[in-house]
Length: 279
Image 1: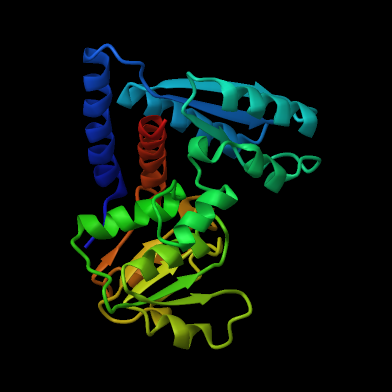
Image 2 (image 1 turned 180 degrees about the vertical axis):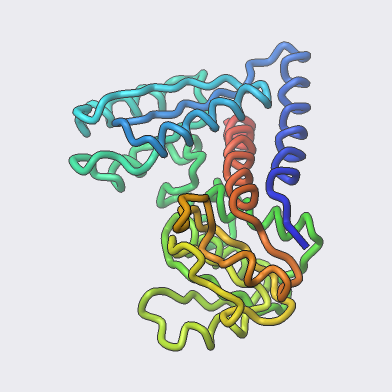
């Protein structure tokens, strides 16, 4: 079974669109997302464009602030402070990565936690660890929505997450743990990786290596969520999983493109709406 991220994300956005239309009908202010882009990174520019399009689709306001790579950390912190204080802005997102002269963690911590729609602020991370209500990173949350869409119950299942980033690996591990899964986090220092991943009822691949996981890494009948976004030898988009080699062995799998990617944007819209309501 193919887990179609495009279809699932479209449904989420349609639901948000209805809520925003209701706010308009009631004469209320509509939610607003502010996106800050520093520098000329082509991939970041594409991501920002997609976020603006998603805002337009659901009827939210978007504010894009683009600065060249010479923009200083002090200037960025002052900009974030002004957005924190702006009552019209509900969500603030600084597109990562930022140029080397800017301290990424300092920027994340400067954003008001209630407007932190990426879910990266330490106070939102703490809420996730404690299983309290906060803003959760979009990609991991999107993966939970995908499992819900295929009615997959994680209770008692063995989940292996390959990758330990703060953006995907760690938060998705916690989300699975909160659903009573038995979770293993594997990474570049894991010995016998193949033995570890072959135990997984759910394999989450997030290492950034094109087609790394072939069928020898995957248990028969597993569910595979592929977070990778790479280019193969023919410059075609591909995931961390060798899709063609794995697809016939598994119960369900996300394609690349059209899998986890669209979910990230949909959950960003969801987080912006949540932030709006909380404020």
